[in-house]
Image (cartoon, rainbow, N blue to C red; front, side, top):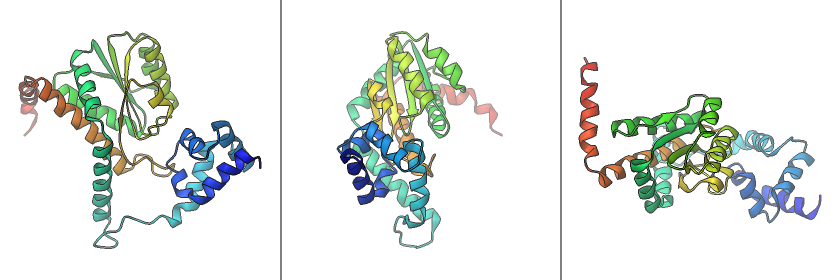
Length: 260
């Protein structure tokens, strides 16, 4: 291997577990190499790209992964609770309170709010749409990537786009971000990776803990970290505009007759 590829190989051998949670940009920087060298490294080993290499590495390491230590070994529920607690503590440490306040203010003033995420990230996007509806803030969420891309092609400077991507590298989400950014819209990213293509485009980044491996997409700890961010935004909106508390009451009453 060349020296650049040797540095990548040495980093992977020294800490293979951490590679599962890194983007190609993060690995390149920490291995003192380049993204092109990381790709060449993967191809030298017979993989078409970085994600293919990570998937193979995840399979290789799967039997070595140890669960979070608990007071009751084998208690799956307790293991999940302990993992979630760690993820929430880390997320609250990572979150910039000013960014939460800025995003909340934008939600109160934006001409149009567009939300988008795919696969497991779509769950977080739908939850955000629901929380905003309870607050009387109308937001649109595209359930189809082509519709989301078309909508972003007509974005305006007064619009706000909130894009959810755990990896920050999902192609459909990036396309929406690039289109909307090019037309002057403000872009907010909810992601678990600081150094990702999505984070590089966004005006505001809300960082959740617990990035995922190729084998743990949609993991509980990743989702609960993102849901914490959504609730933090909703709570901040009610502090900035206390009248929204009355809106919550009104929206609750509007469906009260749906309960038996």
